[in-house]
Length: 364
Image: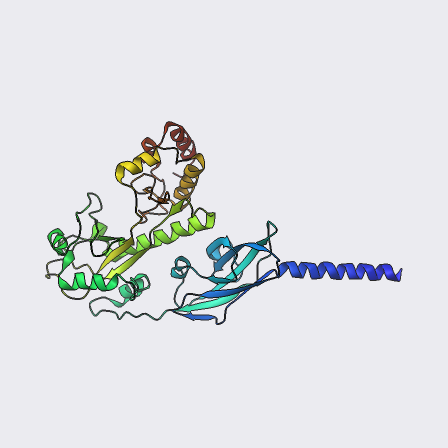
């Protein structure tokens, strides 16, 4: 009888130990809880023999409730994890955040690690110009083109030599390619031969404020939209199919300044070129077999989940030369209903049927 009880005790102890071992399959730590300018990097330790996948979650509360979650990423296992730029840009200077992880071993996800707290402290290389208000600078500064970015000296030279954004003529004289104001938004989209691989979006000093909003408000909305779309794509594991450009705000030099009768613009938007197909090539791709039932469902899911009011058309979600669909119109989000009917004529007959069925139950 004694040996039986002993056996039961040993078995119970083994089950508790096994449970504890399973619950501590991975531990995530950082050398310092405070990261000053350097990208936050974390070390992972695990007891799994052959970890295959890694899931990382970032939150602003250690409980990791849905409303606390800021970022999630699933990818190959690595012993050192560096927080990507997308996630880092979502964090506010000096706030407390928490990170946790789990690994997949033997085709099964293990338990979450304990939350690890950390902070980010960014020391800006920029000095606020005298002609820009403090509250405006505080909003814009986290999104400025990095001081050490290779194109910044080129832009500084271009915009210091003349007041390039005064009007269309001055843009052309400064070397910008085919600048013109778009019909509805009056936005000028252009490139410059000295800055290949980038697109510039701007409003002219000669223009009124579009919808009564300062230019930087439009840029901040577009950057927020990028962050939301990219997070959704990563969360769903669809990075092989969709992508978004990196966008920064560039602060124009204080001088030369425009004449007093003009509405001075202080910022332009710098955007990574997505290498998209030409107009007709893009239309052909949307009507081709490349648009599968699965791809169209995924595209609808992103548009509907985020309320991407004007993204459901080829011009605002074009195919790139790498085969991915690029979400390039990121200013309007959480705005339903999404204008799905604009996409229908560009799909094959089979996909039109699917599209109509998908969008029938969309939010009004």
